Image (tube, rainbow, N blue to C red):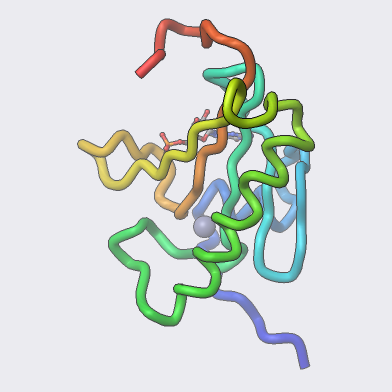
Length: 126
Ligand code: 5GP
Ligand code: ZN
C-alpha cells in the first residue's frame, strides 16, 4: 500500500504538489516535487519541495535526513538541466528561507535553486 503523505489542506505548495494549482514542473518522484518559481529572481529559479508537508527547517527531524540529502543531491543535476552554466564559471545558489525574519513566505519547506548569467533581476542580488 502506498503511504499517504501528510498534507495541509490550506497550504499552497501542497495544492501545487497535488495538481490543484498549476505549476511548471521541473522534476517529480515519489517523495519530491520541483517547479519553476512564479516570480524568478534569476534566469533559472526553481523550487524543490518534499511532497510531505514539513513547515520549515525548524520542523525537520532525523527522520528527514535522507529526504534533505536527496534534495541537495538533486539540485546540481536539475540546475544544469534547467540551463545553469557549468561550475566554476557558472554555478548556482541554493537557499532555504526559514521563518519570517529568514524571509520565508510559504510555510512548506522549499529549497530555492537559482542561477544563470548575472545580473539577476529585481535588484535582489544578495
Ligand atoms: P520564500 O519567500 O517562502 O522562501 O519563497 C516562496 C517562493 O514561492 C517565492 O519565491 C514565490 O515567488 C514562490 N511562489 C509563491 N506562490 C507561488 C505559486 O503559486 N506558484 C509558484 N510557482 N511559485 C510561487
Ligand atoms: Zn504544504
